Image (cartoon, rainbow, N blue to C red; front, side):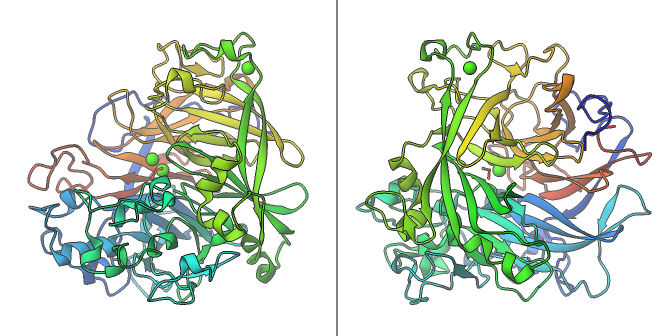
Length: 587
Ligand code: FEO
Ligand code: CA
Ligand code: CA
Ligand code: CA
């Protein structure tokens, strides 16, 4: 149904101006609080956080580091299970006197336990938009998943020789997940969490194997390596060459079953997964949109072979194991000479065109010459190279609009694209500020696309805000995570703001006369990126993950660059913001 108004969904808040404040700053009339911080107890028997005496045993039961993707499974009006990814660790901020050249064994073990994800029970405060951690009672759903949690593979590549190791000769039981960045949920109430930059945890990759370079896996021992191999030999690829093939997957986790084994779904391919958003196609198939977040990487789509059946849980839980994995190719509709590297709009007034989903693999059948189905799934980047997919400016989150069905992609930036390499879908050379891509699916494998937003300072002539009055919009740089409210407004969080101010959360209507009217809703503390975001079903609360506060070159525990949230050492945390009088977020 169409919301009231003009497609803008009644967004009337006063935007937060760009700033360098060490707080979570929200518009007038809004409040914010911290829900859960690095080190807070997750399991009921976890010890209290003690920065100077942290142990691996404590960390295994406490909230992990660098919270990223956030989702909430609401249970009734006042309770919920919050899922949060823990993407990576900042040892230099976590440990006083940390030596990257010589980390202690305990520091390495703490880092392994600080990765992964958390399920925590939360509850609404006094019926309003504020939520807090449940800190008493049984908390039966609370769970930590770490780099050491036993998992399993399913789908066409499970059990393949390339996934077998000495510890798992069947190639079906990987251990742990790493660098879980974005994510999504399934219609049956589970989490999909994306393993992104898994390469950085390994040493001694084989230089003779072309997939080593294609996935950026170190061939020696890079300086700054966390040296996980010193406590778990499997991270040394000279000894266990296939271990790295067991990372880089989409992991499905059931937050309602604390005993369940997380599943690495091989049918969704292996790359530096950023996110996975599901939707049901008009003809009933489950569709998963995914980005591969590196410069010049691709956008993917998975379509299940079988149809989703409402309420048939056992059937639905097989859908992610069989289907077709596609990669996107974008064609511009303007003459090539008008996409000239100046960043100026072409004569037809839009960066737009048509596109095609190119099939890579369907179940056991490969569509890529010279590669088996399992090889396509394990070395998906290499497969996509062979079919002429379009190299994008770091595809991060991909999110369908629940109101219109159009699909939006955050392309964060790409400092390496040259003027000779621009195309209509990636039209700016050395793209510092990124852009947003809109895809309107046709039947089958065709789609139309356009760029509603080319980010940056609105005074920069290469920016584009869907034709909206640029004197009214907020500057925006480096879009990363996306979310929609129920009115169909696009919420955009940023990572790496190249305009010199703090990262934040923005909203942009995508329909009506306010299409392109970008406004900043919130900013995060110094050195942090904004992750999540998540707007509750009643639209009264927005959750953001404040990732890596204080991550600024030269900062250490003795010289912190942020003191958020406690006025002491910075702690990555999930925050919630709400309207003081109970209004909708953005009103
Ligand atoms: Fe972990 Fe692509 O951001
Ligand atoms: Ca991200
Ligand atoms: Ca055009
Ligand atoms: Ca990012």
